[in-house]
Length: 478
Ligand code: FAD
Ligand code: SF4
Ligand code: SF4
Image (cartoon, rainbow, N blue to C red; front, side, top):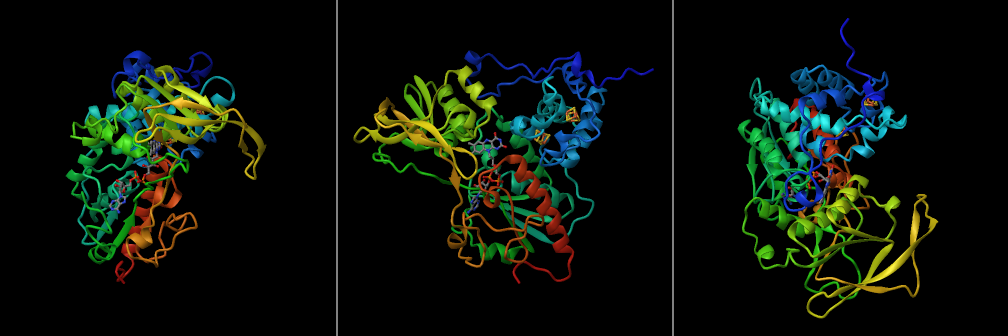
């Protein structure tokens, strides 16, 4: 009788791929996890108990068919595993690397709930797709027939690219506009290489270029080309512009040199990794080398900043967050990685102002405690009077989150409806906006969110756009 390779969770312990030692990985921007060896991937996939009602799948935004590709991996049938995995996910190797699995698929694995340690779903997903690329199983996108309709996509982040992929597969003519000089959005310029190495993103962009997707880069819609012109040139338009307006700290001294915005800081670092000339990095303005660095914020962006500063050779890196560890929005896995690399977290602290004249010299810090829960049930931080102190700093990075830009005003389309938060109002399923034939996805609709949600939105919007294009005499410029 054939050996059952599944249900091994009682005898086989959870094992993530090997993490490079902290002292070594803190010296470069390469990913910190090594790849599974083939036997290890099969062994770990075999821990899955093949649930009849797989909670992992229902908590994956893409509803990936996780139990099936785990079983096929355990059986060594990797090409079939890849086929199933890529059927629901446009970029599985990216999600396998950077989804916060502890809050999504893995956090809801029944084995985790029963105390045996979750199946390492993300690592297996990454392994399957990396293997597919290495073996040439990732096929070029070749539409069966060309169509005459064209779609303009504004924003080359994961939301826009997922839609571009699906539309092009159906033969639609696709043009993607982006204000950056490289496609990928935050995958390229936000998320650091130690979480997501850039060749992983670039190979997907090359795949789309080879498929005939046109990229118009260095093109800011609303400046270099009007939104109306894009509507006039295409039969449907997708807005996938993300959220980029950084929330500022309202505290005295915030304008001093040496107090920088998280995304400026991360973008400069990512550009250096591409080998670009970056004047603000070379001048030291956006470089932590030899500096005492303080990062303010407790989300994933703050985690990326502290770990970038370590790799740039900061003399010390502290992260100030106004709540405690249990109440921070960032992933616990990332906090642990940061601590291993030498970051110090100073919980229950908030900036009150900054010392120094022309350049920052320190952060005036208030100590906080957690008070009564607010309407959402979350405990609000309260200031502890008389406990202030000054934290010396040569570089302060503000990582307090992002808000949407005022797109209707910037693009001269007041009829484009937005919510009271400034995000674009779009139908929950079709993603159509208040303008016929104009769709919107990703962070510009959800507010700052996750890559996997942007991919889901992009895929759904592509389906809706195909339906729209199939209707007689529909053009976006009507
Ligand atoms: P984006 O990726 O932001 O792409 C939008 C694109 O639109 C950009 O390329 C931009 O240049 C372009 N654009 C904007 N305005 C215009 C215009 N007027 N004209 C032309 N082009 C324009 N999520 C995770 O799941 N895991 C993580 O580990 C993670 N880490 C993160 C780390 C950082 C530092 C940040 C900031 C975010 C992180 N996120 C992470 C969130 C994730 O990156 C976003 O949710 C996701 O990228 C949103 O995709 P998007 O396509 O909506 O927008
Ligand atoms: Fe988990 Fe993300 Fe993969 Fe879904 S896409 S299975 S949430 S890692
Ligand atoms: Fe397998 Fe866990 Fe998903 Fe169940 S919840 S199917 S054990 S990965």
